[in-house]
Length: 562
Ligand code: NOJ
Ligand code: CA
Image (cartoon, rainbow, N blue to C red; front, side, top):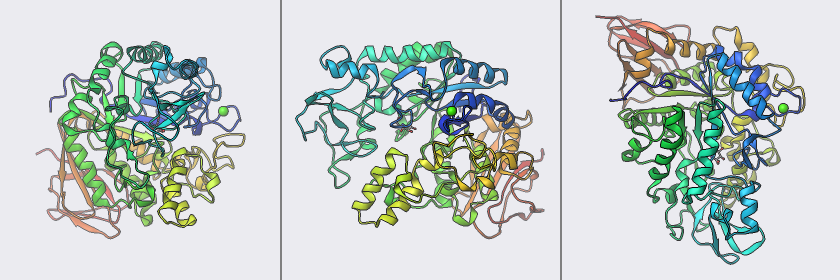
C-alpha cells in the first residue's frame, strides 16, 4: 500500500491509562496524575511510547469523566494543571508522549455552557446544544441513547423543551452544526497542544453528525426505540467538520490522533485514515464487538477462536490498504481480554501471552490497556450495589425484562460490565495492591495476591516479561521495518482453532497459534526455522514436516535468508 511519508507515530506503542484506577499518590483512594508520574519509569521500561490518559478534566463523574464540566482544568481529584505540566515534562524526559481524551460530542450538564443554555434556551448558549420544543412524554424521534432510554430529556426549568443526549442525560450533545461550538472545541485542543500534549484519543466522534432529527427508524427492541449505531449510519457529511479540525488544529501541530469510530463503511476509510485521512489512526472494534446483540448484553454470545481470527484478519484486509488501525484487545469499556476471548481453561499465562503475541504482531499501532500487560482478569460481582458502570444498570434491566432471573442478570452484567477493566491496577500483593494507602474507590480484585507487577517484574516467564519482549522485538532494528510497515499475509484462514499469519518486509516473520486444548501439527514452510518467541517451554519443529503446537501455544518464527 501507499502509506505516504513516514510519520513519527507509525512505530509507536500506545498505553492507555484510566487515571482513577492507575495509582494514587495522596491516599484518598483515587488514582491521580501524581501517581502516574511515579510510574513513568515502569512505563518506559515496558516500552510504552504514547500514554493515552483517559479524561482527567473537571467533571461530576456521572460517566467517569466522560462528562466534562471544564475542558481546560484538571479535576482536583486528579491533581492540578501544574501536575499535568509536570507529567508532560517527566514523560518527555523518558522519551514518551502524552495524548489526552478529546470528548467533543458532549459535555456535562454542569458545564457553564449548559447552565447558560438552561437560563436562556434561545440565547447564544442555547444554540450550543440541540434543544427542541416537545411536551411531556413526547419525543421528536425514537432514538435510544447508548446507555438506554430515549436520547431526549426535559431541559431543566423548561417543561415544554427537550435537549438531546446520545449518552447519559447528564451528557448533553454539543451542536456541531454551530460554527461557534466547533471553534470552542478547536481552541481547547490548541490550548492543550500548546502545553506539550502530542495529540488525542478522539471519543465517540461519529456522533457529532446526526441525520435529520425528526427521522424515526424501525424499532429494534420492545421499547420502540432504535439504537444509535443504526441512526448514525444515516448521517452524511461528518468530513466537513473533521476537515476543519484537521486543517486548523491537527496538521499544524503534527498531532497523533486515534479515533473511536464504530460502524464505519469500508468506502469511508480513506476519509478517516491514510495520507488524506482526518485522523492518524482509528480503533478497530471488530474483535471487541464479536457476539454483540441488539437485544442487549444478556443476548451476547461467547467468542470462539475462529471468530476472533476472522475478525482480526477481516480488519487487516480492510484497513491495511488505507492506513494504520490501532489494535486493542482491551480498554476501559470492555471486560478483560483473557476472560473475553479465551475459554475458561485457557485463562492462564500461556493463553494471555498467546493473545498478546497475536495482536501485537499484526499490522497497526498496538495499544495496551493498563493491567493487560500483567494479565489482569475480570472481577466477580456479589451484588448489584457493587456496580459502578452507568451502562450496566440499564443492561441489568433489559436482562430482567427478557425473563432472566436476578442471579442470571447479575452474571450477565458481571461478565460484560465496564467495571471489570476499572478495578485498581495491581502493583503488588499488599492489601491495597500497591495502588493506594487509603480506601480504594473501587474494589480490588482479590487475585492481586498472585497477579501483580511486583511478582512479575523479575520473572522472565511472566506475562509482563512477554509484553516487554514483544515490544523489544517490534522495536529492534532487525525487525522494526517488517513489523511496522511489512505486508500482512493471513494463512490457514478456514482452519478450525488456528491463527497463523506472516509479516513480510526486509525479513519474513510468521506467527502461529494453536487456539485449542490439544496439540496439533501445522505445516509451515521449512524456511521459518528461527524461533523469535515462544509462549511455552517446549517447541517441536520437524524438518520438512511442519511444527507441532501444544495447546494454546504461540510461536513467532523468522525465515532464514535464502
Ligand atoms: C466512549 C468512552 O470510551 C466511554 O467510556 C464513554 O462512556 C463514552 N464514549 C461517552 O463519552
Ligand atoms: Ca488520589
